[in-house]
Amino acid sequence: MSPLTELVGYHFEKPSLLDEALTHPSLSGSYNYQRLEFLGDRVLGLSVSTWLLEAYPSEAEGRLNRRFTSLVRKETLAEMARRLGIVEAIKLTPGAAAEGTREKEAVQADVCEAVIGAMYLDGGFAVADQFIRKHWVPLMNEDTEAVKDNKTLLQEWCQGRSIPLPKYKVIGRAGLDHSPIFTIEVTVEGMGCAQAEGGAKRLAEQAAAKALYATLSGEK
Image (cartoon, rainbow, N blue to C red; front, top):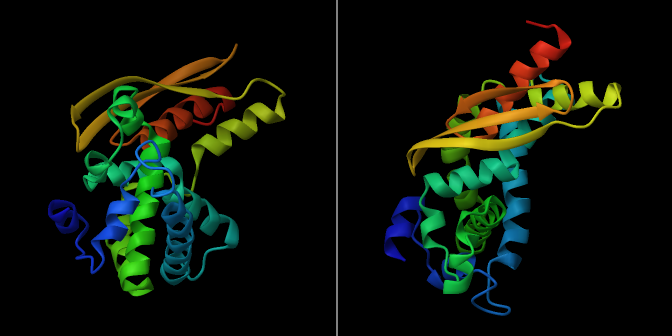
C-alpha cells in the first residue's frame, strides 16, 4: 500500500479506506470500491466545478459545462488512473484479471473516483480538493480542444441529417504504459472516416472528430 500512497501524494490515516477503494467486486461481496466510487464522483464534481468558476469568471454556463464534462468523463478518469499507477494496484480475482477487467476504462475510472472518495473520508474535502487540483488542472491545460468539443459537433452534424452517429475505435497504440500514443479512427457510415493520434483516447477521439467534421461540413 505504501508505494500507491506515495504516488497519490497522501498518507492515509485509515489505510483500510484505500484498500477498499482498490478492491474489485469480483474479490469481495460488499467490501469493494462501489460505494466509495459513488462518493468520489460527487467530490470530484464539486471540486472541478468550483475550480472552473474561479478560473473562468467570464465564461457562460455552456462553455463551463463543456470544460466540466471533459474533466470528469470516464476517459479522463481512466487516463488519470493509469498516470498515477492506480490501475496496477487494483485488487481482483485471477479470473477477472484474465478476462481483462483491469484494462477496462469503466473499471479504471470507477477506482479513480473511489480513491478520491477514500481521501475525502480520511482527510476531508480539502485533502481531496488539493489532490484533484494538482492533477486535473494540468490535464485541462493539455486539452486545448475541450471547449470546442469536436465530438459533439460531429454528432450534432449527423443528427441534423438523420444519419448514423459516429463510431470510434482504437486502431493503434504505441509508447510506454504511462505515456501511450493512441490512434483512433472515427467513421460515419456512408459518409467517410478520419484518423488521429493523441496521448489519451479522448484527445485522439477529439482530433479525429475534428478532422472528419471539417471534411463533412466544409469547415477547414
